[in-house]
Image (cartoon, rainbow, N blue to C red; front, side):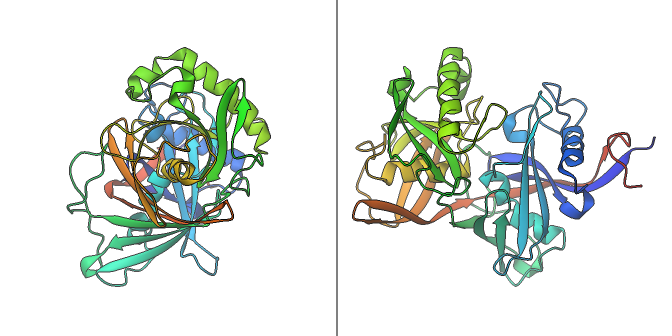
Length: 363
């Protein structure tokens, strides 16, 4: 049987990369779609040798775009996290780094017309319902990728893309603190279960027997740490209303430590079975909110004073990420109104990706 070709744009979004596809070029049935995405990535091999994945969780991500029927949004962004080796596809989470490339990709695909030297693309993340405004540089009606913006974890400079996240509170669970508690004890360890842009289980690094300043590689080698976190994550997932999360990447896990390089705090973010080499955009919002909310495991850890909107500088394994949180505290009740970040993206390739016709054929 002949192979099936699917048009795609290959982009770096933030500190992740992957193919960006039109949803209309893919099967509607999610089971068939999962098989197609596994084939595109080459999941099932540590190097993804028979696909275009990069052999890590930050390079086996896929964005699927379509014009939105939402009154506010221009584009619907459907995200898939494909496993490197397990041939699993998770449609529950969103990805803020891949989302950075949605604005430029939508323009390149002809789904959005540029409006001048800058173009605002309003994106609805259909996995979570989060709404995001992206401001893309489009001088002369063409997406500009060259620029002076720098983000740690990505070499060189690029054009800035300004992001404003709305409706981030209770993104998947429907509640800021989905267990009903600001802080609780699971397996003898104090954690905060929180949902801002991404459901997370957050703890203090010291309570897990680490400093919080280890490299991602050092943490990945710490099997006892991952066993401890996973046992807690499974219980937390049930308490957060997410059910059995054994085969799901949500909730994610985060550990906090006091800043040591001029930032607001030091963070380590887990995907959840490997340490993120930098920091996820969605995770940054949840971790920053945890640092700002009274009564969480992060209370007293934040360096410097914070008034809303607060700009926090989070130290991660490869540098720092700046995130702005607009919030309110009324009678001790913490509410997140929006979050803002500056990121970059770059188009890397475009054309057609091929999968075996035995996996899926349009005929």
